[in-house]
Length: 88
Image (cartoon, rainbow, N blue to C red; front, side, top):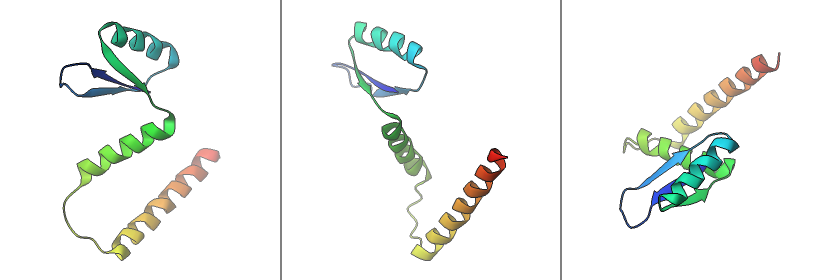
């Protein structure tokens, strides 16, 4: 995974997740066009993506700790059941 940014122009960044061969080509192109290239490992990408999901889901409402814990327990139960199905 790489983040490409444009030098001297305030355009932002693009995150691209692809196979190694394609990323090598895209990296070369971005550098030739004058962009900066930052490589992310899988954990960094997940952290970035999770942060973006949190921003999109943000409502500004106050929620109790108990409500959050109930939803997390329910979600973790769904994940465990899905993993068991996949392992069969």
